[in-house]
Length: 255
Ligand code: URA
Image (cartoon, rainbow, N blue to C red):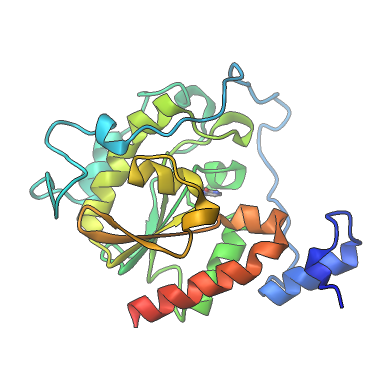
């Protein structure tokens, strides 16, 4: 018999609701009202698909991607990094954002999730992964026997790109130095990249998430792992089997 998840994306609403229920998403999600919605969102010039610069290229000279703990900034803290970011105007996203989404969770988390960029809900609330994709990520975390407070959640860039487009090369280059420092301070046992933007940024090279998900890499002396982005899963329910496999791998690694 054909699995319902293999049906076309045009399958009836009931089947989608059943699928989300299987994922554990029982309450229906409603996007909070957006203040200032009456103003049209300014849209930046369309650009070619995002290119992922090696993080090393964007790091200050004291930081290097290679070698255990190489270039860690002595005495760095999450508060200090946040203070340095300030009311950031370093890239062209600044005029479009409402809030800088720095990251949230346990400052000494064993597990860090790195997403791509804040969306509309995150931009409003100043917290990562609080929209529909975030609801699914929360469910994944709980399936690992943890809570959002046990892990740390952040993104490659800290400001919402207009229209939720992919982050661009210059934005990643400007912002990822702060992610690198956050990861250096937290020193988790495992970094889990959610989707290809996080993976390619931290690996510094172009790799296919479909090919390398579920595998471990080395990132500055820490294990790096990748699975699909929860937003991808919401659009492609067939990928749920692989994500469940990846969650089992993470659980085993941490146990
Ligand atoms: N998608 C992301 O990559 N990050 C968020 O914080 C929310 C959605």
